[in-house]
Length: 138
Image (cartoon, rainbow, N blue to C red):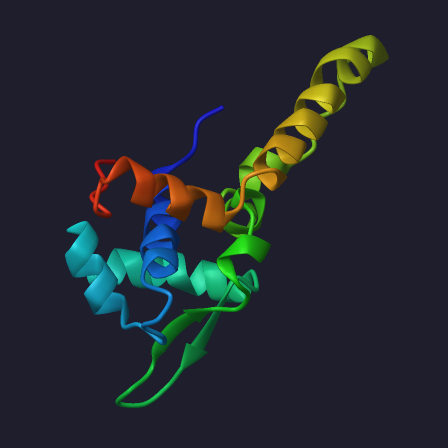
């Protein structure tokens, strides 16, 4: 399984937002600068996250993006699902039903369960305890 750079940056950007939950809404430019990535690229990522229901946008001079829910209520699956569409697609039917039954169905089920078991708050807590200060190397 390979997660794209968009998925990695989505996780990093939302972790940054969770670490600074008292600052809301936050401008894309602020997070892009902190992560040292293109603002335009991050706007694309945030557009997908907004469409996926993870973020809400506020327009205007004091506008920006905010998490729709508390970090403890947002899972890694919630973040990756709108970004990594191909990751969660059902594989094409195999010539042998046994392949689907024994390989693809359990792989998909276990992957989704694992991603749903980790919250954004879990990641933020780990980032705080590891003292990485929000530095992300992707």
